[in-house]
Amino acid sequence: MDNPIEELSFEAALRELETIVSRLESGDAPLDEAIRLYERGDQLRLRCKERLDAAQTRIEAIRLDGEGRPTGTAPFAAG
Image 1 (cartoon, rainbow, N blue to C red):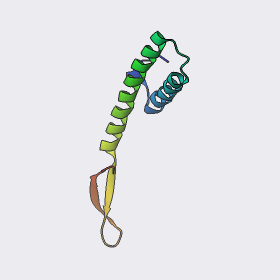
Image 2 (image 1 turned 180 degrees about the vertical axis):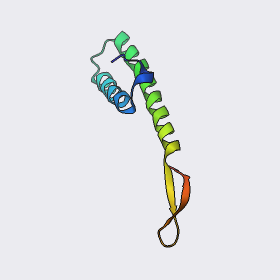
Image 3 (image 1 turned 90 degrees about the vertical axis):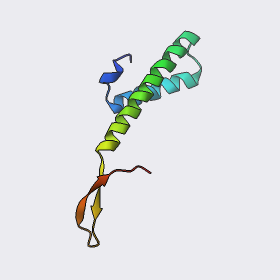
């Protein structure tokens, strides 16, 4: 924990965020630690969102013609 957030992969940030959520949900953290954990968790949440948004812009859906052949690409639209 406490690695620079901008250097974390999506998976590492998500794992750390899950650990923080579990710790906060347990109610065992003293107030000062809970505040620090919450702040770090919020930064991790933003990092994960940024990584997902970046990945979404790179994903392209392949358009197919009536015979199932690729005819081009279109931006991915998550539903």
